[in-house]
Length: 402
Ligand SMILES: Cc1cc2nc3c(=O)[nH]c(=O)nc-3n(C[C@H](O)[C@H](O)[C@H](O)COP(=O)(O)OP(=O)(O)OC[C@H]3O[C@@H](n4cnc5c(N)ncnc54)[C@H](O)[C@@H]3O)c2cc1C
View 1 (cartoon, rainbow, N blue to C red):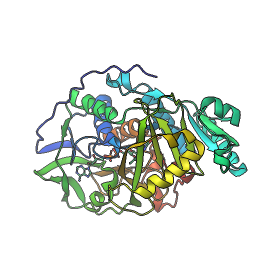
View 2: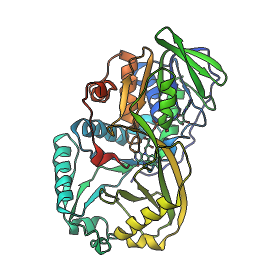
View 3: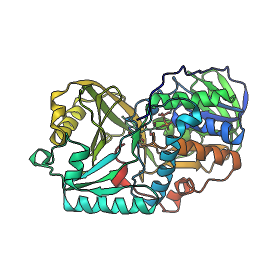
View 4: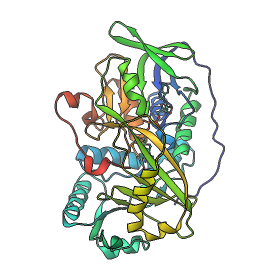
């Protein structure tokens, strides 16, 4: 666990100019990280990030903060492993505590087919550079003494895959740290400035219209999370994305330590403990596409029924808060980063329920693409053109949640 040192985060706001080299729409983790790496790695500082609300108002400030690389396809494992490693050095790079804490992630198996799936995951992870090992029920219990190995008599634990490098980090500090790093290098970040349209010169996007007038740019990047379909539509781009709500909740203080992150593919739920001792619980996204931020009682009811089978102590705690974010879920559950076929207009999207862990690698890669005009190798497989080539990268076993 990192020692948390509270230091003032110095954010300096700017009045936007009329013209920039790069306009980034959306002050979430991906937009701000791209701005930071443009300035820090490529010396490109003539950049503005335009945020409709406040920075981190979207999913980057609403997620359950899990960082892991134990995905189910090689391209994803390599990409997320790089991101996980960037996170490990982020406090030094950004000179700011993000409360990065290594916890380890247990993925439970209740049936023989699930055990085989977890074995396959472990082998693939190791082959692609991420550490994941199989553990027995007894080893699982040692890592998480609170676990009921009978699963309430219905979901017996036959084994699990264990990903020791999985971690968490304080989500809004990640947003603020990238914002501070970008601002220190001269990037402008403007809050409460919604992009309402895109400017065109023939087939090329040449800037954005905002609630306070137009801004011209050589490149416009959309990093707007669940709102991407409406922004991309203004450029005439139809994306294979649906926006779905994803909910989560925390309980009151649990007095004992709960070290790992516990996940379950059959029950599609996961549990960890926050730095404040609250139990943080998430599950799969709502099946009905929607832009509604309303939380539902049915989500609480079904998720509580699942997690208390595995971790009976949760039944004695009280639910403190519940919230919702709108997730940009792609057709193959993998992100979409890069060109859109419209000159001057790029996207970083499809981050769905799993994009917090991707913020460093996604931002670094998008900055390289904008600076050099070439997609770095780690981003290459995630281009939008994969759908036209029928070369999609379905990873549903790993990405329905966190
Ligand atoms: C409940 C929940 C739990 C999650 N848990 C995890 C997890 O454990 N691990 C993980 O890796 N991921 C998780 N995620 C997913 C993760 O939070 C997102 O994928 C990630 O934060 C996306 O970052 P972003 O920068 O693309 O989008 P966002 O953080 O949503 O930022 C987009 C920003 O764009 C702004 N915006 C929108 N439209 C406009 C406009 N027209 N003009 C200007 N600004 C605009 C919004 O206000 C917003 O601030 C979770 C998500 C939710 C909702």
